[in-house]
Image 1 (cartoon, protein in one colour):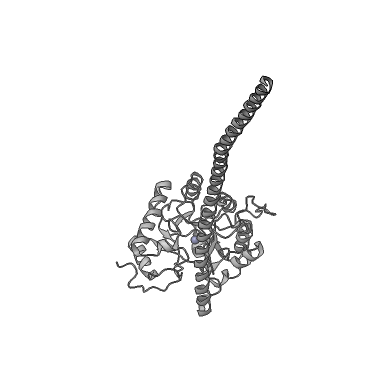
Image 2 (image 1 turned 45 degrees about the vertical axis):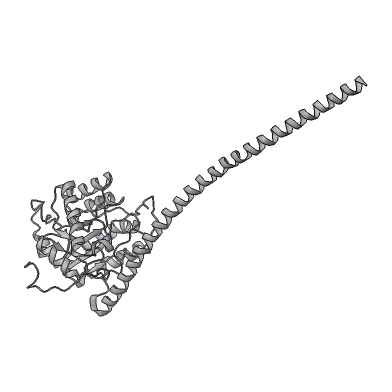
Length: 358
Ligand code: ZN
């Protein structure tokens, strides 16, 4: 009997032990499992947060691009109407295009390097703020056709290359730059001035919606780019190009108001009468750019050619040597930087008696 009792007691103890183990295991499972799950979920949430941030950034970027392109489309429409009304086919459809183009990292090599060297009779007439340039520019003054190469939206990763090409032909151009403040942008702006080209203003922000909101907004942006260029180069820029040109259809304010304001600042604005066409969303071929830039030059005494110094415009840089060579090959034609002597090329018609009297 005692044996039996002992065995029963041992069995009970064993069962109790088992039960205890079960309870502990269950308790551990009940506590630990949710904790582990919590960790896993937290990690997931963090990952989703990051993804969400990325997506929000992308949406913001895309919204910006969409806005820009809508503006460009409006410009295109207005320019098309303008062209039909006799403004001429050379007036650019689109002017700004930093967006909407894939950036190319490598610069496609140019097949032919400039071989003809500086053309005879090409002289720099000096920037307005730097009249002690080089040479008397006698032939330039008397040439039948004066051509002004202008580059908008820079500086960009191509500025140095453009400057080298211009140097290799010993010609000067005009750069309408915007308020880019990186170290490389500052250096590029300094190079433009140091190498004797005309440094023009093309607004600080290049955001149509901001610049053209009101005269006050325009002035604020104008002063910002003017002061920035002076700070970086010591040059007081005296020429301005409106983003989208003075004939843009984006501004709700009469563009003449802004033009009148520039008069009060002793600043002249320039549009263009020949467009390279590189302002559109589509990257043009070198051949097309050369054709656009050169086919109409003989029609004008003064040709102001619109091009872009922009990271998306690789073919403009590729086409530049041929464009220059073709222009220099034309009879009685010179390439000059815009100066105080340059005949105005403006899209909006202004009353001479009101210009400059405010
Ligand atoms: Zn522009």
